[in-house]
Length: 89
Image 1 (spheres, helix red, strand yellow):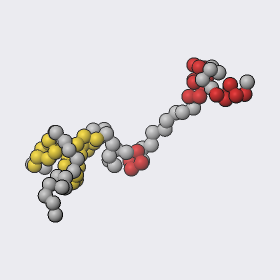
Image 2: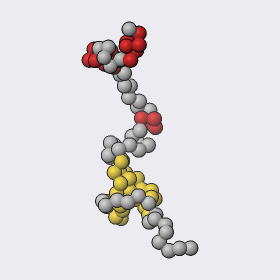
Image 3: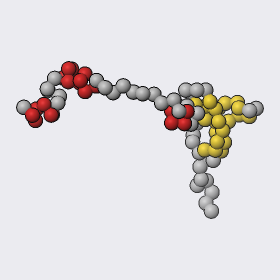
Image 4: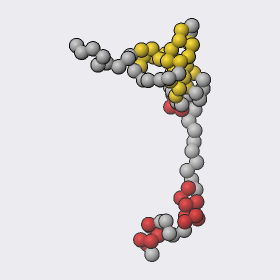
């Protein structure tokens, strides 16, 4: 087998910034930051969402109000931006 063909596969700490949750897993991801975790130093990867904070896994779904977006668009642009109004006219 050729030498130096495989990436460096090592233990890495992933830090979910939204809920301050950290976990160790193995990865080849490159990172410049390091963190002390459980008495040992690991490379650090900061992430926005993990299973600890994702609404699907936590059961805390956010309801996004999309009602009124079309009406707001029509008020702002009138019939100029709407192809349906031009086609109907």
